[in-house]
Length: 153
Figure 1 (cartoon, rainbow, N blue to C red):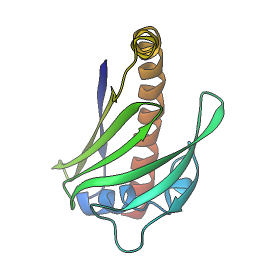
Figure 2: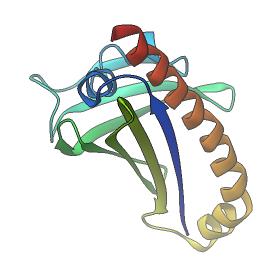
Figure 3: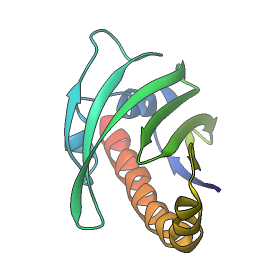
Figure 4: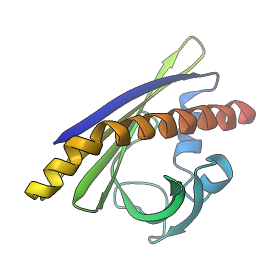
């Protein structure tokens, strides 16, 4: 079962400034209240192939997930992927200049990569609850990215 959601936040900062915030992997714990820690696994600038482990507080407990940059088109868009618990996750950030600032659209998707019958049943039962929690957490991330970017302009 595939699940997806899309959220947009207008930010009073240039696409370059917003890009610098969303691609500052090491700085994520200082920007995003849901991120507890980050461990970079690759060297060099942000781009396709950049990998890291990110620990977030989700549903009252800490979860560590290995993430990687699948695509990067500075400062227009980037796609970050992760795979955990039999699910593939994809997050696309799209940056569009508008009214002297930037519309930042986050599109999140989850897909069962190797679903069993039990996995499909659990996804059907818990998918809506999980996506509602994800929507809330991602909306908070967007607001915190906006606050950081607007403080840098």
